[in-house]
Image (cartoon, rainbow, N blue to C red):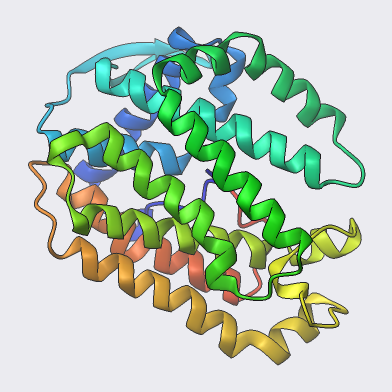
Length: 291
């Protein structure tokens, strides 16, 4: 994923903020344990949300411990990883692998850093994740291939282009939750995936234009610069992003959580709206990975 699904810390209760941080640090440490210390840089807001949500739906209570961090010797509260966290780590690995692979195939000038990162993932972590989730691995491979095919054909429909990533998130949460999943949960993650795809495309317009790379908003449109783009298509962008946001909220209303409701509601009601307004307000550096 991309690091867009964030909390709105200014409108978050202190207890929910520290609970969120405990999940963040716990996931980061679990990635280090299950994969490698280098892979800890892949910890991102989106997967922390995924982790908190799945634990809440499955009613798997968090186990809090005070532990030091590799970056700081001072002990802090973390949520200890468990078998469910291990599944989240594997899904994170698969998403990173296919995102890096897609970037390499799409780019006219493949990044040496990304190629090295992909090599580190492939060396062992990806193989393990693929073994644990062969069905998801095949699905991710298929959906990214479908996306590249639509891109090569010059598909102009944003809904069609967002569908592969939306399907990946919807299916991933279904696999993790099993019989505890529901249509509302699958719909929520589908529209969340759609929102992520659209906001990432909007955020990347200037970069993609400079690098001569595909962007769904360039199809049938003569892109010149970001200011002109927002002036001419700002209303369309707002409609696309807020429609997906509203669909996420509508599905979430019907979902019962056992705990973590404060942090999760903050993210879905306020965090992604804040990120939407950041993008529409043309703020720079909207992508954030670490808290």
